[in-house]
Length: 85
Image (cartoon, rainbow, N blue to C red; front, side):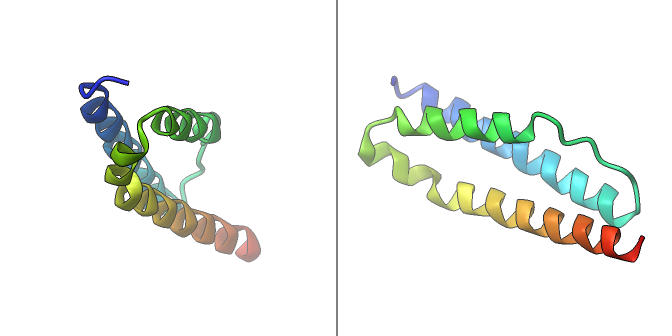
């Protein structure tokens, strides 16, 4: 994959991070969420990263861990809402 793909993949991660932050805020406000397609989008992103040469993949470790933290927070928030319902 060419070097210009790196900024595009990083931008995709930033976009997903912003979307997850907004979803978490909505969940905390008691709003219903429709996250259909999120798993497919994250799977496609990870697959694209895996096509990069090994030495370029390291640039994504922190960003992917940040996404994971957002997803876990979102999951915890929605699960606690379901338990209280």
